[in-house]
Image: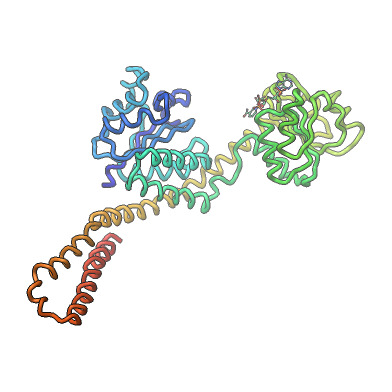
Length: 405
Ligand SMILES: NC(=O)c1ccc[n+]([C@@H]2O[C@H](COP(=O)([O-])OP(=O)(O)OC[C@H]3O[C@@H](n4cnc5c(N)ncnc54)[C@H](OP(=O)(O)O)[C@@H]3O)[C@@H](O)[C@H]2O)c1
């Protein structure tokens, strides 16, 4: 029954992200606890989705799922959780049942319910969670049907809405800013800092065909590592002052003071005119205020990029209403597919039963009468019974499917 689908979930909507870990499965070996949970709670099918802002238990069970059930589940998942946390579980958990559970799964897979609306990462995590549960034998027909449809819903949302169109990450926004300035693919772009963020910026730009990047970093070794992945050149940070030709610069280091100071920058310009794009992703800023205000500089800082990220997130949120229509349509399809599948399962013994009837006709009920039949007559009879057999199987299936459409 569709009512047996349940989703027990702890998300950023009700729980501080720092506390979400309390509701995760704590196990020394992956999968070690799941067997006990599934068995003790009478769960027929199971999958477990764990991301940085969500812990979801997607199950199919005939058991009543109430706070007592949820408390038992979480205690088994994390024996170290405090009694106080368990006593307050009703404040933090969201429980979805039946069609609402199905809808919730569709919305999660389609990233409508995400903290960062439209992040496609959740779709990958959802698929992996299912595949992991499947490999371990915790899924069956019911979750297979749910997952199949959720994948279709997510694909439809990504292709029919603009939900993941505008970038939200600081690295992608920095890259996008350079692209939008119409800088040509061979523009010389300096990456100052070779940490995690600038690595993402470099890869983003390289993916968008920029192939004339130069990395400057405190440790030259790390500069070389990044340069190798983006067809770039590498230098130690002290060489930055010697670089006289560049079109844009992305500055992002952990330094607590300005790296691009006025003397360094003036030396870099070396009397050349023209405006340069300076994107400063560091907190605190790595570009001196005086430099940022120079006529030769178009300065973009992290606050401007964050404002752009908020704007883009709002744009994505507006796409949610279109995505919800897709989910509603999919729910109708799911109800039909679910009922059809139940009928298929219920009728799965039909061919064997009909075959037995056919055998009984020839070998028991009419055996004596058939002894007088010639080989030709027997052959015709066999054909007639074969035809009837096929119809007796096909007609009920067809009628049942027609009824649920
Ligand atoms: N607010 C946001 O949303 C946001 C997002 C992304 C980045 N950021 C900011 O971006 C900066 C870097 O972040 P990240 O994630 O790329 O860090 P990361 O992976 O830790 O890399 C740090 C980088 O800074 C360099 N560095 C550290 N201290 C330095 C110093 N005193 N002088 C010169 N270079 C120094 C390191 O050089 P070595 O290789 O030599 O160690 C490395 O290249 C931080 O200021 C961070 O706050 C903020």
